[in-house]
Image (spheres, rainbow, N blue to C red):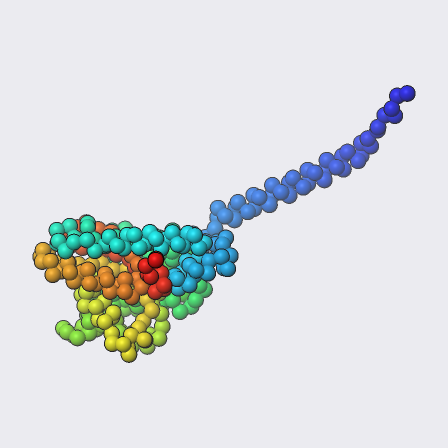
Length: 308
């Protein structure tokens, strides 16, 4: 006996087809929308890390809230830092001093040049992290401009709410709505009528504020400026400024005296002792023997503890 034939209602088939087609179209539109949002995201405004906060507690603590990485990646980052740091003080020879000493020990995934190409611009570590803070009290100090405000303009474009103060021994005028200019001769505040960083912050009522970016290009006075900053007495050290990033040009002079080399070693040791790691190093081709650009990031003291 033949099995009864199964008949399919044509209207039911059409309804199923339309439902499946609708679902496919919705999925395609959803994926297209997600792709479009990712491809047209505002430059510099990056999506949040896929790592949950409870998965990056170690890095958040040891970077003072700057990096959010898995514990395994953070431990690897620390090992790389310590391995390079042990090789950073190699020789006192003035010949090719920076060729042989003080390389970067950490990296910033989204390091970005702020300001013009060439002399005047600086490399900043992950500027989007400042943007994500949603703070209205971002404070930027720019020491030494010589009338070039490309750095300040670029900072203002990236951080519209930033309060930017520019200092130079000459007299210049900041662009409107970009920065405030102050004429000052910068140094340790003790000789030649110089002003120290502490003098400046007290004068402007910034002693209790963080400095998010400090840019320094003061033609050799950076030595006395930083030496004074990091050699405060114990009582004053408790109230020392918290500076997240230091971007500076270092000038060794044209002599080949090894005392200059030893002073430079001491300066970088001071940075390290005060919880700064080098994330960028760049030669100044106008004077490659004696002038280099450096960028430093402030981390927590726990990051610098040598692994056992």
